[in-house]
Image (cartoon, rainbow over all chains, first blue to last red; front, side, top):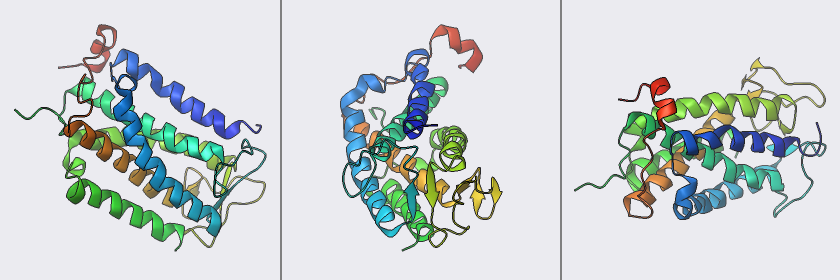
Length: 111
Length: 132
């Protein structure tokens, strides 16, 4: 356990889902523009929530296990990366299920 | 507001975005619930690491359960916690995942990189997955 503990969990999330892009052809990283446009508003909304929660003391981070870099409003860099990594993992899981089962999600061409 | 209140509000806002604002209606789709059940399993694992080792600690005033102890692991189950994490985290996670997928599907719907679609899985995994 070190200052990279939180980052290691995030790295584990990315590594644990990366195989989906290749073996299930999720084509999530391949659709990078759509991915980035999805993440930006999510990152914005949840950073505000995080900033409020940190300011109110709802949660705090053990300084031994985070990088110690804060981005803004006392939000650790680790936490900002969380709001990027988890959406990526969620979309990969979602597209993996679609790939494996061919179920509609509502963004198919309607005509 | 407490974390408990905010977490429930988060779910409400994400659900409103899905059903009424973006009208993606993922909450009515099988693909969402199957994906989410996979995600929640891994959330319990990874969030269990973050909270069990005390990387993230919670204030007892903000959650249903009591505060994270200083140098030991919190309850693995009970005292308002599931896999070391406050139950609130499940609602937080749900709103994070739902909002993400709503935006992803909505962007595809309005034509932003709708293609290439996902799939089909590689031949090597097709048998394991019993792809129809």
